[in-house]
Image (cartoon, rainbow, N blue to C red; front, side, top):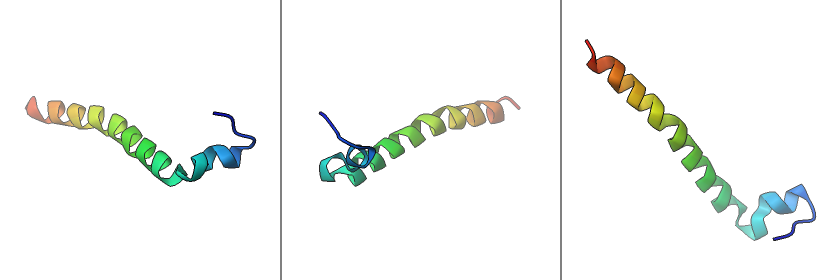
Length: 46
C-alpha cells in the first residue's frame, strides 16, 4: 500500500478506527499478561 500523508496512513482507507483499536487491545494484552503472571507468582510464594 502507498499513502501520501500520515493522515491517510492513520485513516487506513476508512478502517482506521477498527485497525487501531484492535492494535491497541492486542498491545494492552501483551503488556498485561506478563504483569498478571508476575503478580500471581509473587502472591503464590508465601
